[in-house]
Image 1 (spheres, rainbow, N blue to C red):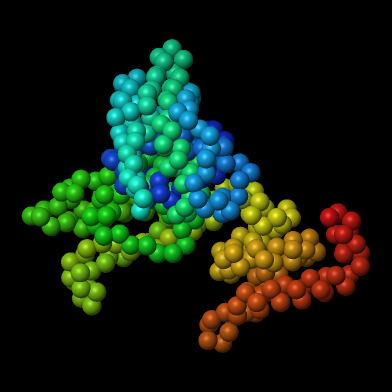
Image 2 (tube, rainbow, N blue to C red):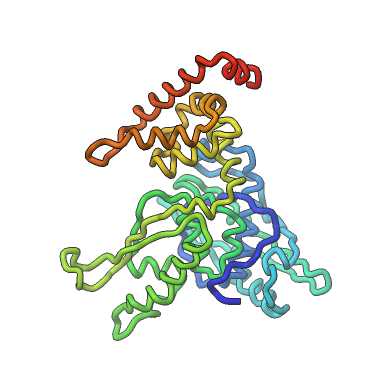
Length: 357
């Protein structure tokens, strides 16, 4: 299988959550099979978070998980690959040997990902005992969190693409990494991609950034563009010392059922509203935090207006100023209110909406 092809995942898709701390942690050069085992651990942690409003707990959450043993079929991490027993054995051995480091202003901690592991040949079962400190890392939301589609992450064929996808998911602002920081984050040896003591930026682009970008461009709801950071910003030919990344959202690759469920949970709006909220976010450039205070109005508009998306498209056209800029959120909300008020003047439609609430 080509390193640019995604694997077909047959297990149910879901959104999972990992802490910002883990997503940005400086990783060792882990194999993709090791990464998938960790993804299944993240899935287990996310299952314990069901019903928890994470944004209300931007701190450490105690899941009550202590050295939990997870058992899964080998197919949960292998899928339709042609790996042999020795590949699984090696991945478990490596993961057992790896450590995870993290620190804050108060402490430094180093721990293992798993304490022990077993692979049973006859049944194909993999059992791992997860270090209790890893649960704490995965649910430490003091610096934020990342929510991403599990199946998209599991299907990515390279460790680099997985790490980029996790960090980019939900990211709205550009971020930058100096070359040394980029290597450290991806688990690349400091002296790799160097010649004569100088970084071969063209090699980093050709062997890491461009292949990762192509994978995400063609398969994932989040991808990126980038530009080089020059030692002399005023000289376009000066040496590149880092990269600035610009997140790009691709709605066509998002699991729409998961998005509908997520938006419904976040905004408490009706069945039709998630698509409208998504339109307001992606096409109108209105952040979700600006939409949430008006969820009752959005809910009513979704119920009363037969083509709410079409109405929003019309409002988007009308909000453009002569200089090309757009009227703000307040103007948009007033425009929606006007449409709702007009719809409410039709007693039969409004009566049906009230009856079904």
